[in-house]
Length: 83
Image (tube, rainbow, N blue to C red; front, side, top):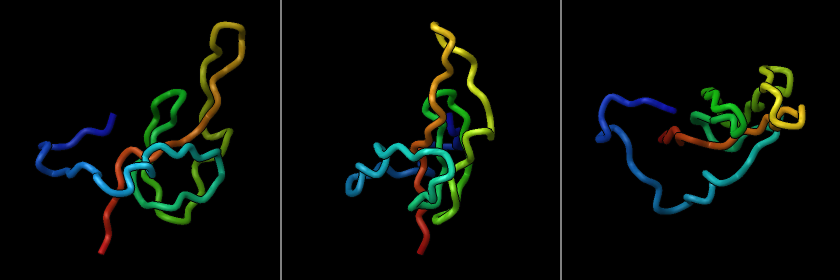
């Protein structure tokens, strides 16, 4: 979970909030600078717009019931607004 000093340091998206629902595969260029969270394991990484999401072999997930590991996918957690 991303941690901040105070809740006043952040705003809540009202427009474009759907950008937080998009899932990015490993190695795909992300469209926004910000913090991205792995949906399967919770690791978080800061990525710049246009840079690729961490690759499939960046980290491994433990096996789930049935022996298969959860997919490594990335989701925007914090949008870094630039001017």
